[in-house]
Image (tube, rainbow, N blue to C red; front, side, top):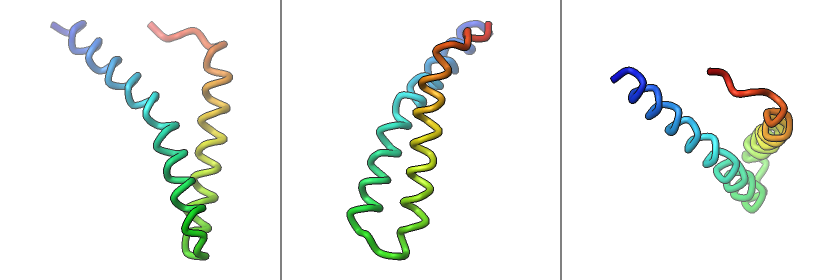
Amino acid sequence: MLSRYRDKRKNAAKKRKNVTIDAVLTNAARASSKGASRNNKVKSNAVDLLNNLVFCKIYSKNIPERK
């Protein structure tokens, strides 16, 4: 029972991780298309987040998955 619960959580986390980059790109595009000064903070946050995600994607390949 416990292992099935853990597997469900793991799969949910994987799905979330895959969605995140798309969501960040969408938010960045939306913020930059409006181009209002009000959105500058949103845009820079989205770009920072995107950079972090790309960094994580590149370097997480070298880190073995925790059991």
